[in-house]
Length: 588
Image 1 (tube, one colour):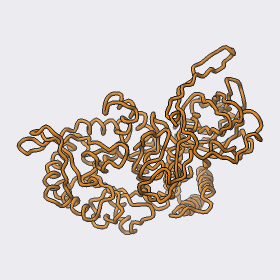
Image 2 (cartoon, rainbow, N blue to C red; image 1 turned 120 degrees about the vertical axis):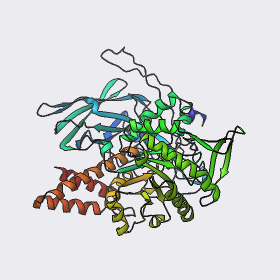
Image 3 (cartoon, helix red, strand yellow; image 1 turned 180 degrees about the vertical axis):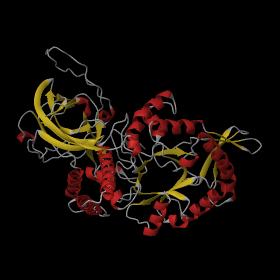
């Protein structure tokens, strides 16, 4: 398996007008070998040569299987202005390897309007090792679970080398500008093999006159926890170095473009007890002076928060955690010159003595930075006793600060006015009167999934449409948004193997190194866009007293209500596509 980890450097010779024109092939990496190839696939029955057809974004096409696709070279889509939509091309090949490229022409309308070819992007879908849900949470041995490779990572390469007897999906996205003129546009995409024309595809997009706001203005409260420490480790750069910041920028910009509202910040080392491959460090340096007083260095915290705000993520700062897993706190003892680990359990004298001076100093710092009103002291799945003690201290020492909590113990009932950002587990319910109380005061109420949830989820083996379902369920169940604990808590080798020692594959991350997106992340953003469109249409129909608008509002509400389910529907993809079609019809 050593070859799995080797970088395979290819040199592409692309043919232009002259057959002697040579262009360097981009660098890429070798995928994992398939541990469970399709032994029933008879590639000898496949007609010689490269085959290509439009597929479905709801399908994951296995690398060793022959796609069950009828030839299709036309695709049509519908988009609001400022929306991103997706399609999937599928390639399969039964001969020796060849170099494939996808080249789009400009998009042109029948009345002479033009959109540049650059609104289209073709990314080659890469395969990663995955497993299965099994028992969900809990430590696992790889040999105890079925292993296979799953198509997920999206590689933005200009060309790609097809292997013999293999399938390769190509994820296509169309980024419609906010100022695009409404109309119906068509482009051709030329598929090339070894520099020569192979086949041509037609892509038609109907662009509505409706406008989706900028992602920073979306009302959907997206909270995917970021892990900057994983970026430094995977890319082998010094933490918080210039190279580290450069690598973080496109990765976090991708998150901002999906409508992220929350900055994940750490108050101390290992707030989650080092469960992930990269234990979160502290963004604040705690220093205990020789006289017993405390000083705090907020340099990294300030840089991180400002960095994220500059990218457009500026609605909330969630600070973890006053109740870390194991109740461990770390500080630098000036007198001894050593780092000290202490245990300060919530409700103890040690807890009050260590957090009281910090809260006073932190409040003062946030006031100076102008961040106090958007900062939450956040906790994750802590016990009722721990939460009660922590909330008591916060109420006494820092009542101005909001509190965020991923609650799996129904703690929220005890703290109606402190939990400004509450997230509950999928399938749980907030009582209607409490939900309304929170709405009236502008408090955030979201839901989350983790390793306990087989559906819906964003594991590397999950059905792609499950990620889009998240946006629809959020509105159907009357939540403000969605929380997922892991945007990029990467495993040891995230481009090769998405499995982890404790949870189902893909649970710890949804995007890949070098700001590579994924099928899961693209579909998640799609569902959030849908949620925003539903919200805007509802507002429009509610403000219009005409019979037509009342009927449209009824149809929209009846449609959305069908997504308020906690079990996977029998015809799940059909439901999702029906929802998309109705949303399209109501947009016209």
